[in-house]
Image (cartoon, rainbow, N blue to C red; front, side, top):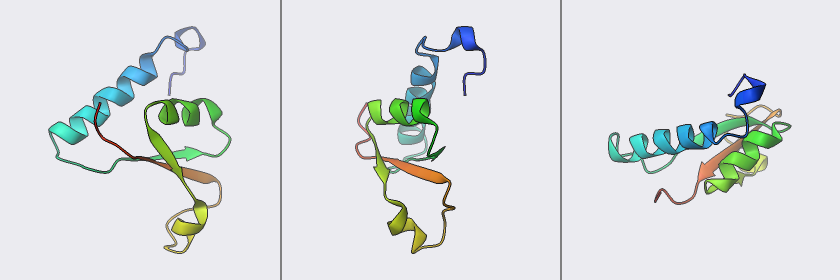
Length: 81
């Protein structure tokens, strides 16, 4: 989250997410990355979609009982950056 309004739209969050994804893949050998984002947080959803994450349907995960109704999950479909 970029709290300072003047610091928004500067690419800081994009760079931060890219660094975290690369760290998870290269250092920790992760092949799936999940982001928990509120359904009405459109700037964050747009950011993660721009970076190749895909929104996963609530129904699939509600069957597993790990989500609440106010939250979206987005998954990185391809970890190549």
